[in-house]
Amino acid sequence: MAQVVRIYQPPKTAMQSGTANTDKWVLEFEPAAAREVEPLMGWISGRDTRRQVKLRFDSREEALAYAARNGYQAELEQPHARKFKPKSYADNFRPDRLRG
Image (tube, helix red, strand yellow):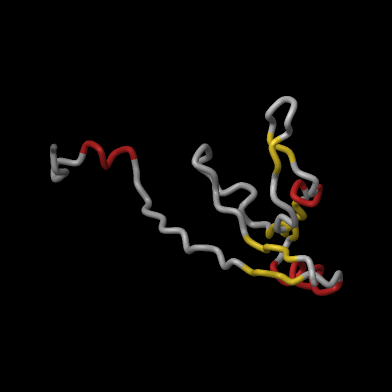
């Protein structure tokens, strides 16, 4: 059975106002085994080291070609369209602004 990989374009984080690092495509391996509770310390651990690997590509086609070349089954997630409303600081002081 082929290893399943997920290909997606990461969204911007809530901690940034810009769109840095959102133009790349990421290939991420799906977990092959469930995580386990380590009996001595109670930590969560796993034997699947591919879970830590994230490959970045400049385009969706490059990521899909890599997956096909290595025999991975790719699940492609399309990015959501970002709704952007341009605002300015001066809009806070407009006379026709509704006061709450």
